[in-house]
Each structure stands twice: as C-alpha cells, then as structure tokens.
Length: 96
Image (cartoon, rainbow, N blue to C red; front, side, top):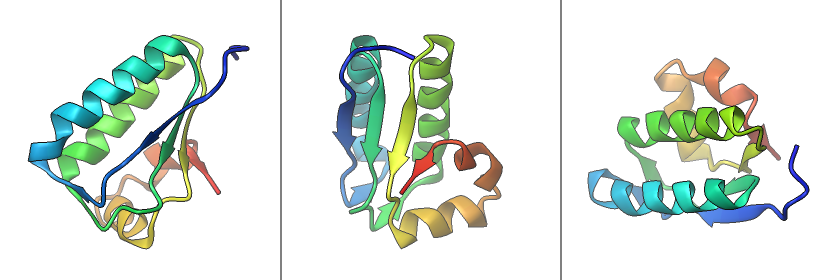
C-alpha cells in the first residue's frame, strides 16, 4: 500500500470506443501517481473493451503495489460485468 493520496477517475455516462483512449490515459496518469479510485456511479452504458481495460488497469496497479478500486458501480455497469461473466475479475475491485 502506498501512502500517497488516492486519485479519483470519474467514468463518463457512455463508455464506448470513442471514449476509451481518454479514459485509458487518465487511468495511466492516476496509476503513475498512486492509488486509484474509479467513480463508476454515473455509467449508463459500457463497452466490453472498457471492462477489459479496467481489469488491465487494476492489474497494472497491483503490479505497482497500488490499490485500485471501483466505487459504487451503476446498475448498468454491474449488469454488463455479470452478463459477460466477469464478476470474479471485478469482485476484488468493487467498493461501495
């Protein structure tokens, strides 16, 4: 665990292929600075690629010995995670 302040990255309502690059860059910048919290409460639609990107970001944070948490995912995001069978991958990340 790091003693640095946790950085929050807010996800947009619609996470599609057009928004992935910006989200990826924000996540990488946040991981470079320390622990990361992803605010997923406002997500209305999320692409499969975005979910895999979040799993990858969490693994990068873990390799750097940093906490990575997804805060209060919306019902839409939780449903997408379950439909794709990714509940196990996300279970350790979900907070709230």
